[in-house]
Length: 317
Length: 317
Figure 1: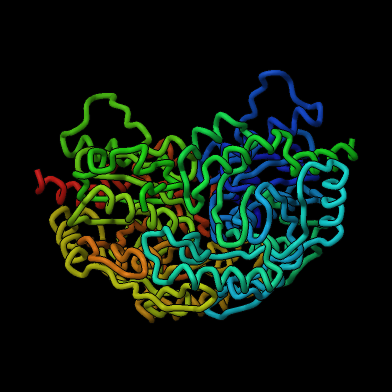
Figure 2 (figure 1 turned 180 degrees about the vertical axis):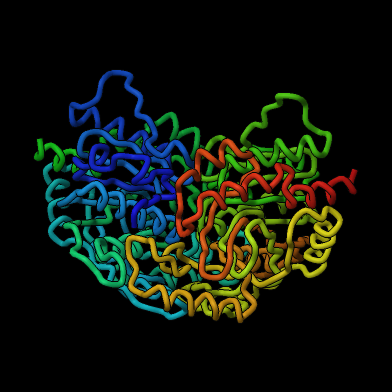
Protein backbone atom coordinates (compact mmCIF):
# COMPACT_ATOMS: atom_id res chain seq x y z
CA UNK A 1 0.00 0.00 0.00
CA UNK A 2 1.69 3.18 -1.20
CA UNK A 3 -0.50 5.72 0.51
CA UNK A 4 -2.46 4.59 3.53
CA UNK A 5 -5.35 6.75 4.63
CA UNK A 6 -6.63 6.51 8.17
CA UNK A 7 -9.89 7.80 6.94
CA UNK A 8 -11.76 8.30 10.22
CA UNK A 9 -8.77 10.04 11.78
CA UNK A 10 -8.34 12.32 8.74
CA UNK A 11 -4.67 11.32 8.68
CA UNK A 12 -2.66 9.70 5.90
CA UNK A 13 0.86 8.47 5.30
CA UNK A 14 1.30 10.78 2.30
CA UNK A 15 0.19 13.87 4.21
CA UNK A 16 1.57 13.17 7.69
CA UNK A 17 5.00 12.01 8.92
CA UNK A 18 3.83 9.23 11.21
CA UNK A 19 7.19 8.25 12.78
CA UNK A 20 7.90 11.90 13.61
CA UNK A 21 4.42 12.50 15.00
CA UNK A 22 3.85 9.25 16.87
CA UNK A 23 7.12 7.28 16.94
CA UNK A 24 7.65 7.86 20.69
CA UNK A 25 4.18 6.64 21.73
CA UNK A 26 4.30 3.94 24.41
CA UNK A 27 0.89 4.28 26.04
CA UNK A 28 -2.47 4.64 24.37
CA UNK A 29 -5.50 5.45 26.47
CA UNK A 30 -8.86 5.17 24.80
CA UNK A 31 -12.31 6.18 26.04
CA UNK A 32 -15.72 7.03 24.65
CA UNK A 33 -16.10 10.77 24.97
CA UNK A 34 -13.95 13.30 23.05
CA UNK A 35 -14.09 15.92 25.81
CA UNK A 36 -13.13 13.39 28.44
CA UNK A 37 -10.10 12.28 26.42
CA UNK A 38 -9.06 15.92 26.08
CA UNK A 39 -9.40 16.37 29.84
CA UNK A 40 -7.38 13.23 30.30
CA UNK A 41 -4.43 14.45 28.24
CA UNK A 42 -4.31 17.74 30.18
CA UNK A 43 -4.29 15.79 33.42
CA UNK A 44 -1.64 13.35 32.31
CA UNK A 45 0.56 16.16 30.98
CA UNK A 46 0.59 17.73 34.42
CA UNK A 47 1.21 14.41 36.14
CA UNK A 48 4.15 13.69 33.85
CA UNK A 49 5.57 17.19 34.22
CA UNK A 50 5.16 17.75 30.49
CA UNK A 51 2.44 20.36 30.62
CA UNK A 52 2.53 24.09 31.07
CA UNK A 53 -0.02 26.24 32.87
CA UNK A 54 -3.05 26.95 30.70
CA UNK A 55 -1.66 24.89 27.85
CA UNK A 56 -4.14 23.82 25.18
CA UNK A 57 -3.82 20.44 23.56
CA UNK A 58 -4.76 20.47 19.89
CA UNK A 59 -6.96 17.72 18.48
CA UNK A 60 -4.73 15.77 16.10
CA UNK A 61 -7.87 14.59 14.27
CA UNK A 62 -9.32 18.06 13.80
CA UNK A 63 -10.12 17.27 10.16
CA UNK A 64 -12.97 15.00 11.23
CA UNK A 65 -15.61 14.84 13.93
CA UNK A 66 -15.58 11.03 14.05
CA UNK A 67 -12.87 10.76 16.71
CA UNK A 68 -10.63 13.07 18.73
CA UNK A 69 -6.94 12.42 19.46
CA UNK A 70 -4.48 14.13 21.80
CA UNK A 71 -0.84 13.47 22.60
CA UNK A 72 1.65 14.45 25.23
CA UNK A 73 5.04 12.77 25.49
CA UNK A 74 4.65 9.01 25.22
CA UNK A 75 0.91 9.09 25.85
CA UNK A 76 -1.75 9.13 23.16
CA UNK A 77 -5.38 9.74 24.18
CA UNK A 78 -8.08 8.78 21.67
CA UNK A 79 -11.88 8.84 21.82
CA UNK A 80 -13.84 5.99 20.30
CA UNK A 81 -17.55 6.79 20.57
CA UNK A 82 -20.01 4.22 21.84
CA UNK A 83 -20.30 0.55 21.00
CA UNK A 84 -18.33 -2.21 19.32
CA UNK A 85 -18.53 -0.99 15.71
CA UNK A 86 -17.44 2.52 16.63
CA UNK A 87 -14.40 1.44 18.67
CA UNK A 88 -13.53 -1.22 16.07
CA UNK A 89 -13.13 1.38 13.31
CA UNK A 90 -10.93 3.45 15.61
CA UNK A 91 -8.79 0.47 16.64
CA UNK A 92 -8.18 -0.65 13.04
CA UNK A 93 -6.88 2.81 12.24
CA UNK A 94 -4.98 3.12 15.53
CA UNK A 95 -3.14 -0.14 14.85
CA UNK A 96 -2.22 1.12 11.39
CA UNK A 97 -1.06 4.40 12.91
CA UNK A 98 1.21 2.56 15.38
CA UNK A 99 2.48 0.30 12.60
CA UNK A 100 3.34 3.15 10.24
CA UNK A 101 4.90 5.07 13.14
CA UNK A 102 7.21 2.07 13.83
CA UNK A 103 6.06 1.95 17.45
CA UNK A 104 6.83 -1.01 19.68
CA UNK A 105 6.09 -2.20 23.21
CA UNK A 106 2.82 -0.38 23.33
CA UNK A 107 0.46 -0.58 26.30
CA UNK A 108 -3.16 0.14 25.42
CA UNK A 109 -5.65 0.82 28.17
CA UNK A 110 -9.32 1.50 27.81
CA UNK A 111 -10.71 3.66 30.60
CA UNK A 112 -14.30 4.51 31.21
CA UNK A 113 -17.35 3.98 33.30
CA UNK A 114 -19.68 1.03 33.34
CA UNK A 115 -22.59 -0.54 35.08
CA UNK A 116 -21.47 -2.62 38.04
CA UNK A 117 -22.91 -5.74 39.55
CA UNK A 118 -22.61 -6.54 43.23
CA UNK A 119 -19.94 -3.93 43.94
CA UNK A 120 -19.84 -0.80 46.04
CA UNK A 121 -20.28 2.51 44.22
CA UNK A 122 -16.94 3.95 43.19
CA UNK A 123 -15.26 0.58 42.84
CA UNK A 124 -12.75 -0.05 40.10
CA UNK A 125 -12.92 -3.14 37.90
CA UNK A 126 -9.79 -4.28 36.11
CA UNK A 127 -11.03 -6.61 33.42
CA UNK A 128 -9.57 -10.10 33.45
CA UNK A 129 -11.58 -11.22 30.45
CA UNK A 130 -14.38 -9.77 28.41
CA UNK A 131 -17.45 -11.97 28.05
CA UNK A 132 -20.45 -11.66 25.76
CA UNK A 133 -24.12 -11.35 26.78
CA UNK A 134 -24.26 -15.11 27.33
CA UNK A 135 -21.16 -14.91 29.57
CA UNK A 136 -18.85 -16.62 27.06
CA UNK A 137 -15.29 -15.22 26.85
CA UNK A 138 -15.42 -14.61 23.12
CA UNK A 139 -16.14 -12.06 20.42
CA UNK A 140 -18.34 -13.18 17.55
CA UNK A 141 -17.77 -11.44 14.27
CA UNK A 142 -19.24 -11.92 10.79
CA UNK A 143 -16.63 -11.80 8.03
CA UNK A 144 -17.59 -12.48 4.41
CA UNK A 145 -20.94 -13.69 5.74
CA UNK A 146 -19.40 -16.32 8.04
CA UNK A 147 -19.39 -16.15 11.83
CA UNK A 148 -15.98 -16.43 13.41
CA UNK A 149 -15.01 -16.45 17.06
CA UNK A 150 -12.14 -14.41 18.46
CA UNK A 151 -10.40 -14.51 21.81
CA UNK A 152 -11.07 -11.78 24.35
CA UNK A 153 -8.14 -12.50 26.63
CA UNK A 154 -6.29 -9.55 28.05
CA UNK A 155 -2.82 -9.12 29.56
CA UNK A 156 -2.75 -10.84 32.96
CA UNK A 157 0.52 -9.23 33.95
CA UNK A 158 -0.74 -5.73 33.21
CA UNK A 159 -3.88 -6.42 35.22
CA UNK A 160 -1.68 -7.45 38.15
CA UNK A 161 0.44 -4.32 37.81
CA UNK A 162 -2.66 -2.15 37.80
CA UNK A 163 -3.96 -3.97 40.85
CA UNK A 164 -0.64 -3.37 42.56
CA UNK A 165 -0.95 0.37 41.77
CA UNK A 166 -4.36 0.34 43.34
CA UNK A 167 -3.01 -1.26 46.51
CA UNK A 168 -0.26 1.34 46.78
CA UNK A 169 -2.68 4.20 46.28
CA UNK A 170 -5.18 2.57 48.61
CA UNK A 171 -8.07 4.88 47.74
CA UNK A 172 -10.43 2.67 45.81
CA UNK A 173 -12.05 -0.68 46.19
CA UNK A 174 -10.52 -2.48 43.19
CA UNK A 175 -11.26 -5.93 41.86
CA UNK A 176 -10.10 -8.00 38.93
CA UNK A 177 -13.18 -9.52 37.32
CA UNK A 178 -15.04 -10.35 34.15
CA UNK A 179 -16.55 -7.54 32.12
CA UNK A 180 -19.66 -8.23 30.08
CA UNK A 181 -19.73 -6.47 26.70
CA UNK A 182 -23.16 -5.93 25.14
CA UNK A 183 -24.31 -4.60 21.78
CA UNK A 184 -27.08 -2.55 23.33
CA UNK A 185 -27.36 -0.20 26.27
CA UNK A 186 -31.05 -0.52 27.12
CA UNK A 187 -32.45 -3.98 26.34
CA UNK A 188 -28.98 -5.52 26.02
CA UNK A 189 -28.16 -4.55 29.61
CA UNK A 190 -31.61 -5.42 30.96
CA UNK A 191 -32.59 -1.83 31.66
CA UNK A 192 -36.22 -1.08 32.36
CA UNK A 193 -36.20 2.51 31.12
CA UNK A 194 -35.59 2.19 27.40
CA UNK A 195 -38.20 3.04 24.75
CA UNK A 196 -38.76 -0.69 24.35
CA UNK A 197 -38.81 -3.14 27.25
CA UNK A 198 -40.51 -6.51 26.92
CA UNK A 199 -39.36 -8.19 30.15
CA UNK A 200 -40.19 -7.78 33.82
CA UNK A 201 -38.06 -6.44 36.65
CA UNK A 202 -37.89 -9.96 38.06
CA UNK A 203 -36.47 -11.30 34.78
CA UNK A 204 -33.94 -8.47 34.78
CA UNK A 205 -32.76 -9.36 38.26
CA UNK A 206 -32.50 -13.05 37.37
CA UNK A 207 -30.29 -12.17 34.42
CA UNK A 208 -28.00 -9.90 36.44
CA UNK A 209 -27.75 -12.55 39.14
CA UNK A 210 -26.71 -15.13 36.53
CA UNK A 211 -24.11 -12.67 35.21
CA UNK A 212 -22.74 -12.18 38.71
CA UNK A 213 -22.58 -15.93 39.26
CA UNK A 214 -20.57 -16.18 36.01
CA UNK A 215 -17.97 -13.82 37.44
CA UNK A 216 -19.24 -10.66 35.72
CA UNK A 217 -18.57 -7.56 37.81
CA UNK A 218 -19.40 -4.85 35.30
CA UNK A 219 -21.13 -4.25 31.95
CA UNK A 220 -20.15 -2.02 29.06
CA UNK A 221 -20.14 -1.95 25.27
CA UNK A 222 -16.60 -2.06 23.87
CA UNK A 223 -14.31 -4.48 25.71
CA UNK A 224 -14.76 -7.59 23.56
CA UNK A 225 -13.63 -6.12 20.27
CA UNK A 226 -10.97 -4.11 22.10
CA UNK A 227 -9.49 -7.37 23.38
CA UNK A 228 -9.94 -9.15 20.05
CA UNK A 229 -8.25 -6.48 17.94
CA UNK A 230 -5.42 -5.96 20.45
CA UNK A 231 -4.83 -9.74 20.39
CA UNK A 232 -4.70 -9.80 16.61
CA UNK A 233 -2.93 -6.52 16.04
CA UNK A 234 -0.08 -6.57 13.67
CA UNK A 235 -1.65 -9.23 11.51
CA UNK A 236 -1.71 -7.41 8.22
CA UNK A 237 -3.06 -8.84 5.00
CA UNK A 238 -3.67 -12.47 4.13
CA UNK A 239 0.03 -13.19 4.08
CA UNK A 240 0.47 -12.14 7.68
CA UNK A 241 3.42 -10.39 9.25
CA UNK A 242 5.05 -10.04 12.65
CA UNK A 243 2.81 -8.31 15.14
CA UNK A 244 4.22 -5.40 17.10
CA UNK A 245 4.31 -5.99 20.82
CA UNK A 246 1.12 -4.65 22.23
CA UNK A 247 -0.14 -5.24 25.72
CA UNK A 248 -3.63 -4.37 26.65
CA UNK A 249 -6.03 -4.22 29.52
CA UNK A 250 -9.50 -2.92 29.79
CA UNK A 251 -9.50 -0.80 32.83
CA UNK A 252 -12.72 0.56 34.04
CA UNK A 253 -13.60 2.84 36.87
CA UNK A 254 -16.99 1.87 38.09
CA UNK A 255 -18.81 4.41 40.18
CA UNK A 256 -21.85 2.31 40.92
CA UNK A 257 -24.02 0.22 42.62
CA UNK A 258 -25.31 -2.98 44.14
CA UNK A 259 -26.84 -5.86 42.26
CA UNK A 260 -30.20 -4.83 40.94
CA UNK A 261 -29.32 -1.23 40.22
CA UNK A 262 -27.22 -0.91 37.19
CA UNK A 263 -26.65 2.29 35.35
CA UNK A 264 -23.81 3.64 33.35
CA UNK A 265 -22.64 7.14 33.91
CA UNK A 266 -19.71 9.33 33.30
CA UNK A 267 -16.34 9.45 34.93
CA UNK A 268 -16.22 12.42 37.24
CA UNK A 269 -12.72 13.66 36.81
CA UNK A 270 -14.04 17.02 35.78
CA UNK A 271 -15.09 17.32 39.36
CA UNK A 272 -18.11 18.19 41.31
CA UNK A 273 -19.51 21.08 39.29
CA UNK A 274 -19.88 19.13 36.08
CA UNK A 275 -21.06 16.09 37.95
CA UNK A 276 -23.69 18.04 39.76
CA UNK A 277 -24.89 19.78 36.63
CA UNK A 278 -25.10 16.58 34.69
CA UNK A 279 -26.53 14.24 37.24
CA UNK A 280 -28.55 16.29 39.65
CA UNK A 281 -31.93 14.68 39.78
CA UNK A 282 -31.09 12.40 36.90
CA UNK A 283 -32.14 9.27 38.69
CA UNK A 284 -31.69 6.90 35.76
CA UNK A 285 -32.19 3.60 37.48
CA UNK A 286 -31.02 5.10 40.75
CA UNK A 287 -33.54 6.63 43.06
CA UNK A 288 -31.04 8.08 45.46
CA UNK A 289 -29.51 11.23 44.04
CA UNK A 290 -27.92 12.04 47.35
CA UNK A 291 -25.97 8.82 47.15
CA UNK A 292 -24.78 9.66 43.67
CA UNK A 293 -23.72 13.12 44.68
CA UNK A 294 -21.89 11.75 47.70
CA UNK A 295 -20.18 9.34 45.38
CA UNK A 296 -18.77 12.09 43.20
CA UNK A 297 -17.44 13.79 46.28
CA UNK A 298 -15.53 10.69 47.23
CA UNK A 299 -13.73 10.25 43.94
CA UNK A 300 -10.76 12.57 43.80
CA UNK A 301 -9.77 14.20 40.53
CA UNK A 302 -6.61 12.17 40.28
CA UNK A 303 -8.57 9.06 39.61
CA UNK A 304 -6.92 5.73 39.90
CA UNK A 305 -6.69 4.96 36.23
CA UNK A 306 -4.72 8.11 35.60
CA UNK A 307 -2.39 7.53 38.44
CA UNK A 308 -1.73 4.01 37.37
CA UNK A 309 -0.96 5.09 33.85
CA UNK A 310 1.07 8.00 35.08
CA UNK A 311 3.13 5.72 37.23
CA UNK A 312 3.85 3.47 34.31
CA UNK A 313 4.67 6.28 31.96
CA UNK A 314 7.03 7.89 34.44
CA UNK A 315 9.14 4.77 34.48
CA UNK A 316 10.03 5.45 30.90
CA UNK A 317 11.53 8.84 31.45
CA UNK B 1 -41.80 6.88 35.68
CA UNK B 2 -42.00 10.28 37.34
CA UNK B 3 -38.82 11.81 36.00
CA UNK B 4 -37.46 10.40 32.78
CA UNK B 5 -33.88 11.20 31.93
CA UNK B 6 -32.71 10.97 28.34
CA UNK B 7 -29.26 10.49 29.63
CA UNK B 8 -27.25 10.60 26.41
CA UNK B 9 -29.12 13.70 25.24
CA UNK B 10 -28.59 15.43 28.62
CA UNK B 11 -32.34 16.16 28.65
CA UNK B 12 -34.94 15.19 31.23
CA UNK B 13 -38.67 15.57 31.76
CA UNK B 14 -38.16 17.34 35.08
CA UNK B 15 -35.74 19.89 33.64
CA UNK B 16 -37.16 20.40 30.14
CA UNK B 17 -40.69 21.09 28.87
CA UNK B 18 -40.78 18.45 26.14
CA UNK B 19 -44.17 19.31 24.57
CA UNK B 20 -43.17 22.98 24.34
CA UNK B 21 -39.73 22.18 22.93
CA UNK B 22 -40.59 19.36 20.55
CA UNK B 23 -44.38 19.07 20.29
CA UNK B 24 -44.46 20.40 16.71
CA UNK B 25 -41.86 17.97 15.36
CA UNK B 26 -43.05 16.05 12.30
CA UNK B 27 -39.77 15.08 10.63
CA UNK B 28 -36.67 13.66 12.22
CA UNK B 29 -33.51 13.36 10.16
CA UNK B 30 -30.69 11.36 11.64
CA UNK B 31 -27.11 10.93 10.45
CA UNK B 32 -23.73 9.95 11.86
CA UNK B 33 -21.73 13.15 12.09
CA UNK B 34 -22.61 16.04 14.45
CA UNK B 35 -21.23 18.71 12.14
CA UNK B 36 -23.10 17.29 9.20
CA UNK B 37 -26.38 17.36 11.11
CA UNK B 38 -25.73 20.98 12.05
CA UNK B 39 -25.08 21.81 8.41
CA UNK B 40 -28.25 20.01 7.52
CA UNK B 41 -30.45 22.07 9.84
CA UNK B 42 -29.03 25.32 8.46
CA UNK B 43 -29.78 24.12 4.94
CA UNK B 44 -33.29 22.97 5.75
CA UNK B 45 -34.05 26.23 7.58
CA UNK B 46 -33.26 28.16 4.44
CA UNK B 47 -35.21 25.76 2.23
CA UNK B 48 -38.26 26.07 4.47
CA UNK B 49 -37.96 29.84 4.72
CA UNK B 50 -37.51 29.57 8.47
CA UNK B 51 -33.91 30.69 8.66
CA UNK B 52 -32.34 34.11 8.80
CA UNK B 53 -29.04 35.19 7.28
CA UNK B 54 -26.09 34.12 9.42
CA UNK B 55 -28.35 32.44 11.95
CA UNK B 56 -26.70 30.02 14.32
CA UNK B 57 -28.53 26.90 15.41
CA UNK B 58 -27.80 25.95 19.01
CA UNK B 59 -27.09 22.34 19.89
CA UNK B 60 -30.04 21.22 22.02
CA UNK B 61 -27.81 18.51 23.53
CA UNK B 62 -25.00 20.87 24.48
CA UNK B 63 -24.77 19.25 27.93
CA UNK B 64 -23.17 16.15 26.41
CA UNK B 65 -20.78 15.25 23.63
CA UNK B 66 -22.48 11.91 22.91
CA UNK B 67 -24.94 13.29 20.36
CA UNK B 68 -25.84 16.64 18.79
CA UNK B 69 -29.42 17.80 18.11
CA UNK B 70 -30.79 20.76 16.15
CA UNK B 71 -34.31 21.90 15.38
CA UNK B 72 -36.01 24.27 13.02
CA UNK B 73 -39.81 24.35 12.64
CA UNK B 74 -41.11 20.80 12.30
CA UNK B 75 -37.69 19.32 11.55
CA UNK B 76 -35.38 17.75 14.13
CA UNK B 77 -31.83 16.85 13.09
CA UNK B 78 -29.91 14.43 15.32
CA UNK B 79 -26.48 12.82 15.05
CA UNK B 80 -26.04 9.19 16.03
CA UNK B 81 -22.35 8.31 15.77
CA UNK B 82 -21.23 5.15 14.02
CA UNK B 83 -22.63 1.65 14.29
CA UNK B 84 -25.67 -0.19 15.57
CA UNK B 85 -25.08 0.24 19.33
CA UNK B 86 -24.48 3.97 19.00
CA UNK B 87 -27.61 4.68 16.92
CA UNK B 88 -29.64 2.31 19.12
CA UNK B 89 -28.97 4.36 22.25
CA UNK B 90 -29.94 7.52 20.39
CA UNK B 91 -33.13 5.98 18.99
CA UNK B 92 -34.30 4.71 22.38
CA UNK B 93 -33.97 8.22 23.76
CA UNK B 94 -35.42 9.83 20.63
CA UNK B 95 -38.53 7.66 20.86
CA UNK B 96 -38.93 8.64 24.50
CA UNK B 97 -38.47 12.29 23.55
CA UNK B 98 -41.23 12.04 20.90
CA UNK B 99 -43.46 10.17 23.33
CA UNK B 100 -43.06 12.71 26.14
CA UNK B 101 -43.51 15.54 23.65
CA UNK B 102 -46.86 14.01 22.57
CA UNK B 103 -45.75 13.97 18.93
CA UNK B 104 -47.69 12.04 16.31
CA UNK B 105 -47.41 11.19 12.61
CA UNK B 106 -43.67 11.40 12.64
CA UNK B 107 -41.54 10.65 9.60
CA UNK B 108 -38.01 9.55 10.45
CA UNK B 109 -35.36 9.47 7.76
CA UNK B 110 -31.79 8.38 8.09
CA UNK B 111 -29.47 10.11 5.63
CA UNK B 112 -25.86 9.36 5.04
CA UNK B 113 -23.27 7.86 2.80
CA UNK B 114 -22.51 4.23 2.22
CA UNK B 115 -20.51 1.84 0.14
CA UNK B 116 -22.30 0.96 -3.08
CA UNK B 117 -22.35 -2.20 -5.12
CA UNK B 118 -22.81 -2.17 -8.85
CA UNK B 119 -24.02 1.41 -9.04
CA UNK B 120 -22.64 4.55 -10.61
CA UNK B 121 -20.85 6.98 -8.31
CA UNK B 122 -23.25 9.59 -6.97
CA UNK B 123 -26.26 7.31 -7.11
CA UNK B 124 -28.92 7.42 -4.42
CA UNK B 125 -30.21 4.27 -2.74
CA UNK B 126 -33.59 4.36 -1.02
CA UNK B 127 -33.60 1.33 1.23
CA UNK B 128 -36.47 -1.09 0.70
CA UNK B 129 -35.27 -3.44 3.41
CA UNK B 130 -32.21 -3.71 5.57
CA UNK B 131 -30.44 -7.07 5.47
CA UNK B 132 -27.69 -8.49 7.66
CA UNK B 133 -24.24 -9.67 6.58
CA UNK B 134 -25.75 -12.97 5.44
CA UNK B 135 -28.35 -11.07 3.39
CA UNK B 136 -31.28 -11.95 5.65
CA UNK B 137 -33.87 -9.17 6.23
CA UNK B 138 -33.61 -9.27 10.00
CA UNK B 139 -31.95 -7.76 13.04
CA UNK B 140 -30.55 -10.16 15.62
CA UNK B 141 -30.43 -8.86 19.15
CA UNK B 142 -29.43 -10.48 22.45
CA UNK B 143 -31.82 -9.65 25.31
CA UNK B 144 -31.39 -11.24 28.74
CA UNK B 145 -28.88 -13.57 27.11
CA UNK B 146 -31.34 -14.88 24.50
CA UNK B 147 -31.12 -14.12 20.79
CA UNK B 148 -34.26 -12.64 19.30
CA UNK B 149 -35.00 -11.65 15.71
CA UNK B 150 -36.64 -8.38 14.76
CA UNK B 151 -38.11 -7.18 11.51
CA UNK B 152 -36.21 -4.67 9.38
CA UNK B 153 -39.06 -3.66 7.14
CA UNK B 154 -39.37 -0.02 6.24
CA UNK B 155 -42.19 2.14 4.95
CA UNK B 156 -42.89 1.17 1.31
CA UNK B 157 -45.08 4.19 0.71
CA UNK B 158 -42.44 6.62 1.94
CA UNK B 159 -39.85 4.92 -0.27
CA UNK B 160 -42.17 5.44 -3.26
CA UNK B 161 -42.71 9.10 -2.35
CA UNK B 162 -38.97 9.66 -2.12
CA UNK B 163 -38.50 7.94 -5.46
CA UNK B 164 -41.15 10.21 -6.94
CA UNK B 165 -39.26 13.25 -5.58
CA UNK B 166 -36.15 11.97 -7.26
CA UNK B 167 -37.93 11.64 -10.59
CA UNK B 168 -39.26 15.19 -10.37
CA UNK B 169 -35.85 16.58 -9.51
CA UNK B 170 -34.22 14.40 -12.17
CA UNK B 171 -30.65 15.04 -11.05
CA UNK B 172 -29.55 11.74 -9.53
CA UNK B 173 -29.58 8.12 -10.49
CA UNK B 174 -31.87 6.74 -7.78
CA UNK B 175 -32.78 3.15 -7.01
CA UNK B 176 -34.85 1.38 -4.40
CA UNK B 177 -32.82 -1.58 -3.14
CA UNK B 178 -31.64 -3.63 -0.21
CA UNK B 179 -29.13 -2.13 2.18
CA UNK B 180 -26.72 -4.43 3.99
CA UNK B 181 -26.02 -3.43 7.57
CA UNK B 182 -22.76 -4.70 9.09
CA UNK B 183 -21.26 -4.55 12.57
CA UNK B 184 -17.83 -3.74 11.25
CA UNK B 185 -16.42 -1.32 8.69
CA UNK B 186 -13.23 -3.12 7.68
CA UNK B 187 -13.52 -6.90 7.86
CA UNK B 188 -17.32 -6.80 8.06
CA UNK B 189 -17.50 -5.01 4.71
CA UNK B 190 -14.75 -7.09 3.11
CA UNK B 191 -12.25 -4.25 2.95
CA UNK B 192 -8.64 -5.09 2.23
CA UNK B 193 -7.11 -2.10 4.00
CA UNK B 194 -7.93 -2.68 7.68
CA UNK B 195 -5.33 -3.48 10.32
CA UNK B 196 -6.50 -7.09 10.12
CA UNK B 197 -7.41 -8.84 6.88
CA UNK B 198 -7.39 -12.61 6.62
CA UNK B 199 -9.04 -13.10 3.22
CA UNK B 200 -8.00 -12.53 -0.37
CA UNK B 201 -9.19 -9.97 -2.89
CA UNK B 202 -10.84 -12.79 -4.81
CA UNK B 203 -12.84 -13.85 -1.74
CA UNK B 204 -13.85 -10.24 -1.20
CA UNK B 205 -15.17 -9.96 -4.75
CA UNK B 206 -17.08 -13.24 -4.43
CA UNK B 207 -18.78 -11.93 -1.30
CA UNK B 208 -19.74 -8.61 -2.86
CA UNK B 209 -21.04 -10.42 -5.94
CA UNK B 210 -23.20 -12.64 -3.71
CA UNK B 211 -24.50 -9.54 -1.95
CA UNK B 212 -25.38 -7.95 -5.28
CA UNK B 213 -27.18 -11.10 -6.39
CA UNK B 214 -29.20 -10.94 -3.15
CA UNK B 215 -30.42 -7.48 -4.10
CA UNK B 216 -27.95 -5.51 -1.98
CA UNK B 217 -27.11 -2.16 -3.51
CA UNK B 218 -25.26 -0.52 -0.65
CA UNK B 219 -23.59 -1.27 2.69
CA UNK B 220 -23.61 0.68 5.93
CA UNK B 221 -23.71 0.17 9.69
CA UNK B 222 -26.98 1.42 11.18
CA UNK B 223 -30.02 0.58 9.06
CA UNK B 224 -31.09 -2.71 10.68
CA UNK B 225 -31.56 -1.41 14.20
CA UNK B 226 -32.99 1.81 12.80
CA UNK B 227 -35.71 -0.21 11.08
CA UNK B 228 -36.22 -2.50 14.09
CA UNK B 229 -36.63 0.27 16.64
CA UNK B 230 -38.84 2.37 14.34
CA UNK B 231 -41.04 -0.72 13.83
CA UNK B 232 -41.33 -1.30 17.56
CA UNK B 233 -41.50 2.31 18.66
CA UNK B 234 -44.15 3.21 21.14
CA UNK B 235 -44.03 -0.17 22.83
CA UNK B 236 -43.25 0.92 26.34
CA UNK B 237 -42.84 -1.43 29.26
CA UNK B 238 -43.93 -5.04 29.53
CA UNK B 239 -47.58 -4.07 29.55
CA UNK B 240 -47.32 -2.39 26.16
CA UNK B 241 -49.15 0.69 24.97
CA UNK B 242 -50.30 2.24 21.70
CA UNK B 243 -47.41 3.16 19.49
CA UNK B 244 -47.35 6.65 18.04
CA UNK B 245 -47.56 6.71 14.28
CA UNK B 246 -44.06 6.69 12.96
CA UNK B 247 -43.07 6.17 9.38
CA UNK B 248 -39.51 5.53 8.49
CA UNK B 249 -37.19 5.03 5.60
CA UNK B 250 -33.49 4.71 5.44
CA UNK B 251 -32.43 7.05 2.74
CA UNK B 252 -28.89 7.09 1.65
CA UNK B 253 -26.99 9.13 -0.83
CA UNK B 254 -24.33 6.96 -2.27
CA UNK B 255 -21.48 8.69 -4.02
CA UNK B 256 -19.74 5.56 -5.21
CA UNK B 257 -18.67 2.98 -7.34
CA UNK B 258 -18.86 -0.17 -9.41
CA UNK B 259 -18.87 -3.68 -8.03
CA UNK B 260 -15.49 -4.50 -6.63
CA UNK B 261 -14.66 -1.05 -5.32
CA UNK B 262 -16.53 -0.23 -2.22
CA UNK B 263 -15.68 2.56 0.11
CA UNK B 264 -17.69 4.68 2.42
CA UNK B 265 -17.14 8.38 2.48
CA UNK B 266 -18.82 11.52 3.50
CA UNK B 267 -21.69 13.42 2.02
CA UNK B 268 -20.37 16.45 0.23
CA UNK B 269 -23.01 19.03 0.90
CA UNK B 270 -20.40 21.24 2.42
CA UNK B 271 -19.13 21.59 -1.08
CA UNK B 272 -15.98 21.26 -2.99
CA UNK B 273 -13.52 22.91 -0.61
CA UNK B 274 -14.20 20.57 2.26
CA UNK B 275 -14.38 17.63 -0.06
CA UNK B 276 -11.07 18.46 -1.61
CA UNK B 277 -9.38 18.98 1.74
CA UNK B 278 -10.70 15.78 3.16
CA UNK B 279 -10.30 13.44 0.24
CA UNK B 280 -7.45 14.76 -1.86
CA UNK B 281 -5.18 11.84 -2.39
CA UNK B 282 -7.12 9.74 0.05
CA UNK B 283 -7.57 6.82 -2.27
CA UNK B 284 -9.17 4.53 0.30
CA UNK B 285 -10.08 1.61 -1.90
CA UNK B 286 -10.24 3.91 -4.89
CA UNK B 287 -7.17 4.50 -6.96
CA UNK B 288 -8.60 7.31 -9.03
CA UNK B 289 -8.63 10.54 -7.07
CA UNK B 290 -9.53 12.50 -10.14
CA UNK B 291 -12.73 10.51 -10.44
CA UNK B 292 -13.58 11.23 -6.82
CA UNK B 293 -12.92 14.91 -7.21
CA UNK B 294 -15.02 15.01 -10.35
CA UNK B 295 -17.73 13.25 -8.42
CA UNK B 296 -17.89 15.93 -5.77
CA UNK B 297 -18.17 18.55 -8.46
CA UNK B 298 -21.21 16.83 -9.88
CA UNK B 299 -23.18 16.68 -6.65
CA UNK B 300 -24.87 19.99 -6.03
CA UNK B 301 -25.22 21.33 -2.51
CA UNK B 302 -28.96 20.90 -2.52
CA UNK B 303 -28.66 17.17 -2.36
CA UNK B 304 -31.62 15.04 -3.12
CA UNK B 305 -32.35 13.92 0.39
CA UNK B 306 -32.69 17.45 1.56
CA UNK B 307 -34.95 18.43 -1.27
CA UNK B 308 -37.15 15.47 -0.69
CA UNK B 309 -37.48 16.25 2.95
CA UNK B 310 -37.99 19.90 2.23
CA UNK B 311 -40.78 19.09 -0.16
CA UNK B 312 -42.54 16.99 2.42
CA UNK B 313 -42.09 19.52 5.18
CA UNK B 314 -43.38 22.34 3.01
CA UNK B 315 -46.66 20.53 2.56
CA UNK B 316 -47.28 21.00 6.25
CA UNK B 317 -47.07 24.72 6.29
